Length: 405
Image 1: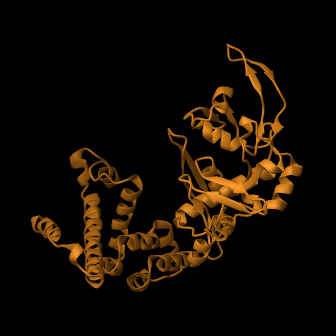
Image 2 (image 1 turned 60 degrees about the horizontal axis):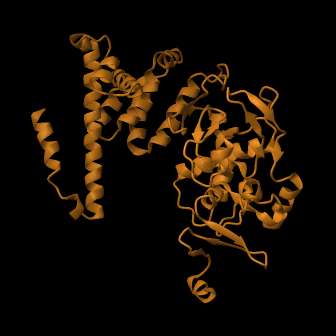
Image 3 (image 1 turned 180 degrees about the vertical axis):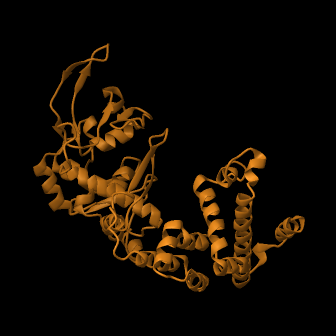
């Protein structure tokens, strides 16, 4: 083991910055093979430790708990490593391919499903030779990407029980929303195959339409935008089930002093589900929303309240859809149904909620305009956009832009 650590430490002496692309590619291939070999040895050692009750020596009952406590693995990683060690004991061909470095730990974990008790029992009942399956999957794993291997394994498992009951798709669906101290939310979940297809089918049009010219956000970022836009459109449609006799909408509560103050005002407004946002964000949300005046007494009890007032009436919004045709920010082609109606002169400063004081902006560019960017409608009906530093955003070939300037 000392020699192993010494060899690994010696790798740090090489100057990777001096290597060319082909050299780096070859080095990565070798390192991947070495990592695969180590993963195979680790899985084998974990299995032997389980058989020898090695965790008991440290006062623990299982290899999973030992790996979590002593190896600092997550519960998922620990459980997968234990399952893989057990599976490789029953899949000699796959184990040999792992030991040779041609099959990854992830691929081995995927194949491990084949010898789970229920699946192994179903194979035995149908006279399936697991030795042949083992040999075939070892070849497939060594020659194909992980995704294709997963498809082969899934197909094999499906054929083990072709006449079984159709699984309930709702049983495996999970969605966890974790709110953080700053109000942001992390999402983690699982969907069945059909549910996943439905979500992808709903999000992909937003991704492919594009939020603006020269989109540089990552795929993950674009999907995040698409999910928020999907929620925005559903809320705006007003077709969701009533929640305690009310339509499901965003709820923001903010004091009049913070609302009128042009400063950013961090942590000034409370959202309906507990998030706290700035006064600037509250003003942004109010641009195309309804506002209800509620006068509170010193004991926190409402003394007076008024009717909800919609800033932009329906007929003004329809006129904006026709006039602007979508987001007016230079370079953006977001359609009207992605857009908010923005007050050019903020309503809190006396700006009217009419078509002459309004512009359609998508979520991203509505945010930009509330943070220093500026838009202006020209006498000929066109829109121009300026950055916070005063330079204008232009599109088109460089020589035409210079001529226009």
